[in-house]
Each structure stands twice: as structure tokens, then as C-alpha cells.
Length: 394
Ligand code: GAF
Image (cartoon, rainbow, N blue to C red):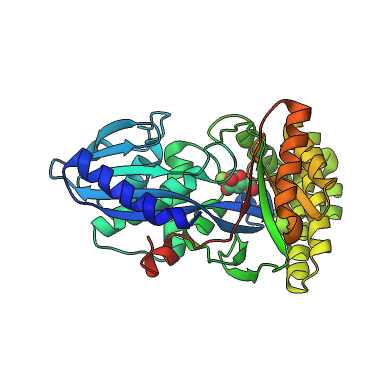
């Protein structure tokens, strides 16, 4: 979809000029898919996402009245905010909370932002578990930094966008999405250590493709199960810290967890078991990728799905159906739910030669079972916002 990025950017710049009567600069951020390592990021664990070829475009031009005016082409809606009055308790439960939260978060970082007009547009499906919110946050950050003639390193960009999400929007997410959307590299997956923020770029296989299937069941992180799960994990982690002196679940074993079983709820026990086994799967998946053992990698994806479904209880009937359908298709090596859960997408590892027929077969079978038409795409690992900017493609 990168081929549409240039035309979409030109269109976004034209619309900005028509709406605000000013020429603008444009900045782009991709979406992401997580290959393996779900709900491990906010416990300082391991994840393996890649940036993908969907995009959000933020166009920006200055204004002199100290106001932030946001226009969403997707919603055809405008919102105007007095920048001086922004505080962490002003979110409105609206799409504009994400870019407004970035202005607030930049201020926490010591970067004061003057008035501006910002246009937002893009093709990241919202509520699908592909990080539409991180994509908006990172695109808005790049635009606002450019307006202030500043740049920040990857870690700082990711941290300030996560702060937007946690402290302004009010979603308890980890740092994976913001990090990969800002720091992704074309043709590579990234294994990110969410404790140290050190990362390793990993080659993707040549004979297999990553296919995303959208169950079309929408989720929201600011409400619902995500927050409950993170509370259940935190409660379990507190017990392990107290009882075993182990700070983070990534350093705990299943034996450590078992020894604390009667001191935590059954829910916390199962959530922690998912996190401990999932961190181990990420390490195994890295080894498999480096050894070009995609059969092993796919098996780990199926196991990760079962753990999200049974221990983390963050899947749903439709997504489970998508995974089961995928598993029956020729050339499918692995399939699992991706992202926060409770709906959204599956990520599938499919032999290149079977990828197109896989898409058709999954759509057909899913529709037959649920009467829902799934969006399915064969996707590419893309550059993150910083690499796009560096290459002059933002
Ligand atoms: C969402 C969150 F935003 C991420 O931080 C991560 O926790 C993910 O769900 C689950 O792995 O995308």
C-alpha cells in the first residue's frame, strides 16, 4: 500500500491548503502487526511486531492565536482547542484526544507547542488491533516536532506517545505500538525488550508472507477487557514480587508462579501464566526466525493463540473461528490473534505461493460460518515514521 502513500500525501496537502488557506508540511506513520508477544509489553517483557503498509498522514501549518485546530478527513470533523488550557483531565472521548494528548505530552517533555492547524487522514482500520491510535500519535508527534524545528530520538518519541495514551487518553497500554510505529524498518520484524527498550531487527522469510485477517469485531482499549487484564496481571505480578522477590514476570518461571498460586486469584494466575509462557515463545520465535525454521515459528503462533484464548481469555468467538479456518488452509504455517484482543485481527504465516488463495478461502469460510465479510490483506513490513522521514518519504 506504500504505492498509495505518495498520492494520499499529495491529496492530504491539497485538502489542508483548501481548508486552512495555507500550505502545509506532511508527516506519515505506518500501522503495526504483532507477530508474537501479546500483553507482555506493559510487564517489561518481549514483543515481536513489524510496521505495516497502512498509514496515517498528519499535515501541519502554524497559526498565531494559540489554538490547536484538528481536522479529520476520515470523520469529516473539526475540533479546536485552546493549547494553554490543555491538561491531563481534558480528554473528550473523541478521536482528537490522540493528537491533543500529544501536544500535552510534548509539554511534559519540556517542548511547548504554539498554535497550529493539523489535518489527519489515513487508511489504518480503527479498532482492528493494528494500532490506529499509535499511528495517529506518532504522525502528530512528527508534525508537531517539525513545526517547532525539533527532532527527538526514537525512545523519546515512543515514550511520549505512550504517555499520551496512558495519562491523557486513559488507556493502560504498553510501549510496543508507539515504538514500532516510530522505529520500524522495511523488510524487518523487531524483537523489542520492553524493559530496556533495546531491540533487534530480524529478517523476515522470503518464501512466506504475513497475512492479516480482520474479524471485523471492534475493540476499544480505553474501555473494556484490556484494562481488566492489565489489572489482573499487575495483581499477580505484585504477589510474585512480594513472595518471590522477583520484580517482573519475565524473570519468573512457571514454578515461581505455581508456588504463589494460592495467594492470587485464579484469573491472575492464568493471566500471569500467559505472560510467562509468551515471553518464552518470543525467544523461541526469534531463534526459529534466525534459523529460517518457519514451521517452528508457525507452531509457536498457534500456541500463542491458544494461550491468549484459554489463559488470557482475550480472544472472542469470531477470532477463534478465523484461526481455526486458517489452520485448515494449505500453506498456512501459523495463525493467531494479534494486538490487544477482544476482537480485531489475526496474523497468519502463509507460504507465498498459497497467500492469494488463502485470502479467498478464509474470506469464504468465515462468511459461511459467521455471515461477516472479513477484510484480509497480504502485507509488507514497512518503515516506521522516523525512517520514512529520513528517506524523505514522510
Ligand atoms: C495493545 C496495546 F496498545 C499494546 O501496548 C499491547 O499491550 C497490545 O495491545 C497487546 O500486546 O495494542
